[in-house]
Length: 362
Ligand code: UD1
Image 1 (cartoon, rainbow, N blue to C red):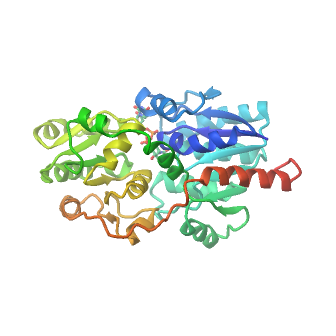
Image 2 (image 1 turned 45 degrees about the vertical axis):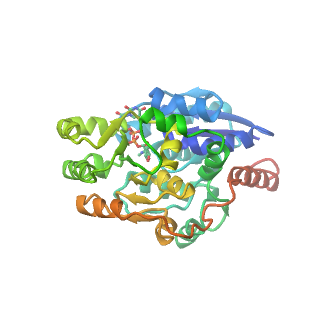
């Protein structure tokens, strides 16, 4: 089977790593990097740390408006798919790279397999929600991380090709985290286990709205205890645009640092008192490592983490962020919500089954 894997943004490298490893045992994979994320710190370091094979092609699309970015990817991906005629196109998550690849493939009648299918925030103002809804509706194989995701698809009338496999991010976490010592990273950042919070902010609704971003900065400052904040490039840009850097520098407890590698992220997350984030993936990673999460959004796709008591949704209201972070505790129970760490093998088995059932024509 010749599989086109399309990735482009940081979380997709983490998701694709275990699937690529499993896929390449028996099949040909062409790994296409759209270039949506292009900095060393946002892209290359993940390939190196996670042992992901170098991309077969990097489209170098880079930044732009949604239309420009998605359109440029669509055009280039279509040409590559015509040239190489893959048996299937494998996409991950909910970024513009996901949608562009799914759309290009479906118009060429190439089957689309979506990993992390069925996630919903039910907030159509999020670009990611549009990307995932559209991708799910044109995918032939839908690999879901949770029973909730399967139910969401059923509600939209999608039941064919749906399989519950667990979460591929758990595969990556289990594969690497245990073998990486965390002490050197804590020493590098000058913190001790349990003595700080880790924070990440990159969602457009938080970064591109001055009041929201200002409120988040003030809330981090009001926490008093150390907050390590690896700042996403989009957020760096908006902190400068809203003139918030001076205020940030005044806050002695908030340490804004460059984007972290996966190894650094995992080490700092595992030892944090709590995570403050608007990331989707990191809400789950906090759960994997038993760290309470305060989510800087009104809603989440990972509803199980909230029901289990490990995640509190607070939006961007400063007082709510402070109260939730100060009172964050570890519940006594942490049920297994995301599978057994072998989701990637199940994705590959699902592809193979569909491939065989179709007589070598998915
Ligand atoms: C994208 C995804 C989001 C995902 C996130 C992970 C979409 C719509 N959004 O958001 O779902 O959670 O990635 O990080 O696809 N930039 C750099 N260097 C880089 C990459 C980006 O400087 O390597 C800057 C660019 O100026 C760009 C901005 O960050 O304009 C935003 O990047 P973009 O990929 O458009 O969206 P993200 O906010 O990263």
